[in-house]
Length: 204
Image (cartoon, rainbow, N blue to C red; front, side, top):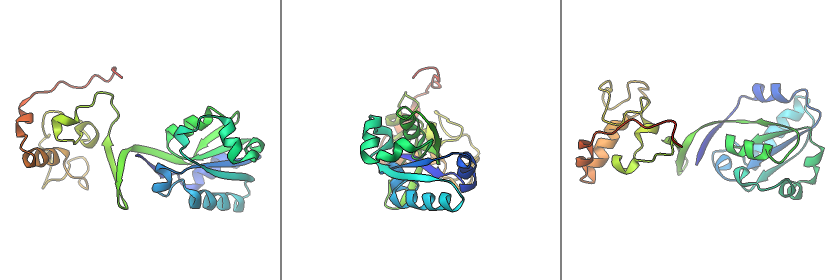
């Protein structure tokens, strides 16, 4: 799941205030589950924008903004999207970029894309994956230190954690303590014996 958060309304309004006609596209997958791009959110921001004087000509929730395949699909859902001079996308950066490939007007993001994570019940879990293209989580019990350790350490903790909390972000559990506990639980502490090279950021 792509983890996103809503931009401040003032920022969104600043992007759209001088646009003649705005159409809003939400996303029924990740954004909807996080309440930053589902039908209620599309309706809410549409109402706020109208109250602020923005001409909103319509809105839809796409099945998945990142999987929209054509402008025709959008037009089938909402023929009046052709009246828009700007499109506001309530999805992740991938979905916003995808929609931009199918419309010949300005496209603006309503959300900030934060990380690749997950959702358990109502709890959103951030930074589970850094999408580095060189996945080695099997070496760490399924916990990614590239994503979950702010220092991206691959060979053990930095030594700065206190009481199991990260030195960089004291609100966050130390990724390496989680890795150790996980490997101990599954009987694979032997994986910590290997020294790993830094990842090559040029490889994708």
